[in-house]
Image (tube, rainbow, N blue to C red):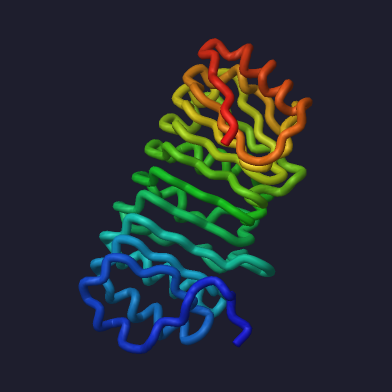
Length: 250
């Protein structure tokens, strides 16, 4: 049926599950508007995962989410071309209780409503291909309760650098990086950061700089294959950090 292979088609009668707390992962690529009308009435939902987003159902999805006042966890996925690009835009007020958000798919720029997620604790981005990186950093850096940030494969364009600056991300404790991504910690950036996890990431002075800066950093956890040159670079940089963070392999 030319649908995203990730997720399932729900049977008719979803609306009857009035007490449902968790619904994932629903493919709304077919019968999308009908399914979303049902989801909108599942007002007890705490966790929702959807895929198959397109120009026909993106706005309806956002409208449905607005009414789910108890929602705590949301996952939206539509990888490939065009992905999520432009389909989630709009002035929406998402549920105040939302604490976890996953966006997997081409976005280019972040939706406006992310700025209003004041209680967001955990954010995962993958394949979002963000090109306006400075603007994204400003928006995400103002999320005062964000403690866990995952910048995964393809989250930003390869020729862009995500700079962590002083005063941004005031509560960030955990940061995960993977894929071809470039990150820089500027002076006095993220004083709360305790753990940095690197997953199959190229490590050098261009892709990861400023490691002596996060003064609360305790651990740098490595997963994947890393060359002796990369490991040497990490050890040298971490030795300059006043908190003497340890490096671990998993």
